[in-house]
Length: 290
Image (cartoon, rainbow, N blue to C red; front, side, top):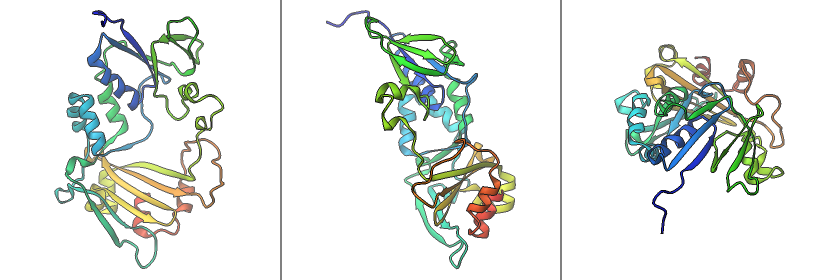
């Protein structure tokens, strides 16, 4: 027979980004049977990056996790700006210089407007954090190791970079690509522990929508666009309720055996951007100059 008063299960969520906080929101209805603590390495909640795209499955997942969160998400979400483009996923066109420059390739349609949406990462995290009760997050706690000592009633010991420790009944690693939790699962010698360069990198930025409209025109600025070319593509979509244009330019390396050098995030790469897209057409280059 099940115990009428089961022992509470405490979960440590390592990482306070979007994944970690969404997990926490999903656990809230199960309190006090299931409790949790979020351990975040930074001194405050924050997101790196700008635009974030959600497809239909993501929309359904948000609704299943928390109907209230879905309603709040829609207050931040951005859709295509024109009613005539409400069900357009992306307009694809030729971005390279040449006789086909600017030529429409295909307009991909969706089932309905809410099949795809975009949001500013930081704005979405603000909404997520507002759901959390006081005291469930501990900041400045970078996880550096996990172990499960014998005789500790199956509790996991978590070690932090500041020399402190904590215990939990279960640990969920939401601490990103440099995750310390992954090593505990796959082993310190596993190839799965080491990120591998995909031979593709991205330049990203945000532009005020007024400026984008001035340079690109209303249609191209306010609706999702995809510019295609050899060894690269550029995508744009509105965020922040249409007040900003998110721009991401992807470019591939020329050989498969090239290694990434230096920091993973490099600021002020305008010269490299100009070099990589030198053979692209005027319209695509106008996007990069916005």
